[in-house]
Length: 165
Image 1: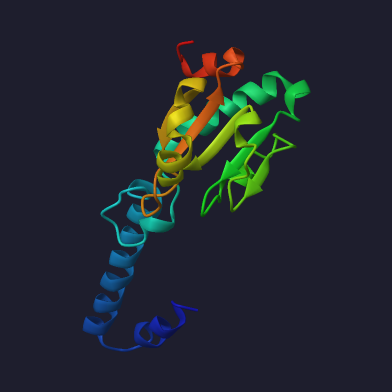
Image 2: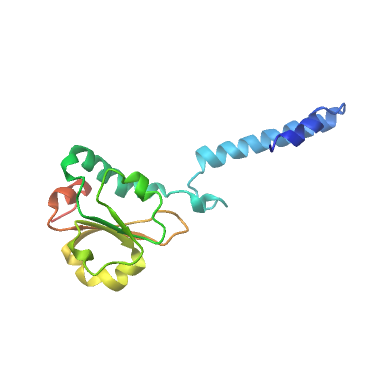
């Protein structure tokens, strides 16, 4: 649909118009390739705010590998509280019992793994941080940071991050 109007200009008998249209199409193609494949996660780009931060893989990929090696743990108690959790439901779909909430429940400390927004952590969970392995990360550049918490009782999961006990 975007290229259709250019067809009228390409049909022109004027070589200058045709060269101009080809130049514009080439520039758009180069820009599109750069934005989609090279700078897709560059926070200086105007549309990157919707992209997932590559740093999030440092948190999610070890969890995904761990659950593949331990399929019997698919019902692990996993709580996720973020204002915007996408793409976590898709990336962590192997954790069948993961609970996504808007408001942190009172029993959040009973979960094996908790992901929450950093500002909420600073208010609610900071006093309990000695009971958890903690890893900071960010889902998207325009979103507030998040925190991964793993209860110290789950040393097997903590070990995938090289965490200390």
